[in-house]
Structures are given as structure tokens and as C-alpha cells.
Length: 293
Image 1 (cartoon, helix red, strand yellow):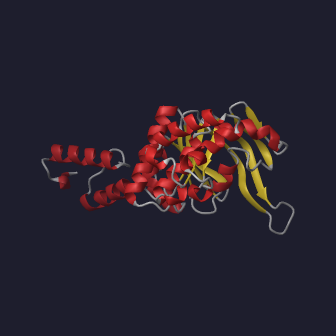
Image 2 (cartoon, helix red, strand yellow; image 1 turned 180 degrees about the horizontal axis):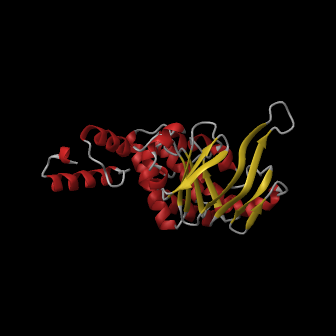
Image 3 (cartoon, rainbow, N blue to C red; image 1 turned 180 degrees about the vertical axis):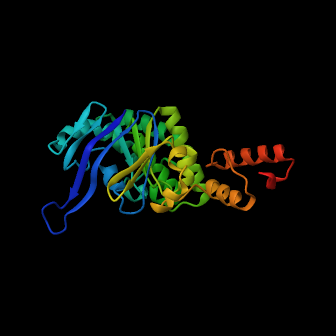
């Protein structure tokens, strides 16, 4: 399901002293089946952009095409029901939105809400619990008895139970330890591949952008300032610094390595795998002496 923004503007509290333009003339496409990372420092408009993806906010001007649906400032709430089945948003700390007495009831809530019978909703809920790695023994427990990471998985399973075509992730690993973060990101990658999802990820973790995304949108003060592949976006370290953005850790290491040894990488490695491969090849060619570069 492709998402196209056409000259979208959004203003908070228009015609008041508190007026603030949060999106400024945004035209961009999120291709069907892509894994798109949305980056930019705090206040760049990322959250406002996200809330347009399922009509929580409607543009002040311009239009958004999501599949067959066109969203403009005139679009009424009742016209958005169908869209909201197709676009699932996992907000930051989604576990705060859990409320049912058992895990399975919480996961089954969305399909029941969208008209599935109790039995159908339970079948979907059990399937999605398995998809996110929740054991059968947890389904009858209260979600509030679980660990933070498990609670987050319950909340994510609840979004997946809507069977969306687009999965929107707002800082989905916030507050998790490194092991939990890695497990969560690998899980999203697997879900994307198994369910042919279009994924939109908002993150401050540039390693996640390099490791998982194939498309990157960069916002600054509500404006679109770049859109391309991770290698295109990260190919200009000075530009990143100028816009308060960082390189992935492997890229930072590679730049420091170049400075120290005088060696030049043919393309800046952005992931640990790419960095290791290039250094191994360099050692092989140079007989172990990297100072030859």
C-alpha cells in the first residue's frame, strides 16, 4: 500500500497567537512494501507526519493518498474507518495502552471491534501472539503481570491483529536494553517479510536505519530536506553534522579509521557486517599493513 503526500501542510492552532506550522509543503512517496525510516531531530515534524498516516490528523492543505483513500482537510472521521484497519500505528511505549484483564482479550480487542466474532477474534489473537513470541502460557495472564518487554509484545500483537498492510513504528525500542532492542528490531524485520508489510519507522537509532531500512525520509523544522536510500543519506557526513544527525556507529568508526591510517574506503561502510568485510579485504590485499592505503 503506497502512501503519497502531495504538498501537505499542517498548522497547529491556526489563527491564534500559538500558531505553529508543523509540516511545510511536504511532497514525498513511501513505496509499497518499503521499509522507510523517518528521521530528524526533536521538533522536526516526525510525530505530526505519523499522525497523518491513518487520519488522526488531517492536512491543513494538500492531500495524502493511502491506497485508494484520499485524505484532505475536508475528510470526515467516518470516512476513515476502513483506512484505520489497514494502517496500524505502534506508538512509543504502547504497553501504556493495555487495558483488558487477560493478554488474549487485549490482543483480540481490535478484530472484535472491527466486526469479527469472539471465536474468529480469538483465532487471530492466538496467531499474532505466536508471531510476536508470546508463549501460550501467558495468554490467560493479566498483561500487567508481564515484564516490560512482554507487555510491549502484547501491545504490538494487538496492532497486528487488525491485519494491517502498513505498520507504523514510533521509536518502538525506547526504554529497552540492547538485547531487547535487537530482538524487537529482528521481529519487525521478520513480520515485514512474512506479511508483506509496508513499514514506517521513526527512530533516533541510526544503526537501525542502516541495518533495516531501504528508504529514508529526513525532516527538519517541518520541511522535507532529504529522501533516498541509507547509503545516499549517509554518504555526506558533513551534511549530517550540519543537520544535527549522526552516522551509524560503523560509519563513525570507518571515518576515524580513515583519518588514522590514511586509507580510503571505496564506499563508506554503514553496518558492522560491511565494515568487517571491507577491513578483512583490506588486510588481505595489504598483507596486514593498513598504512599502505
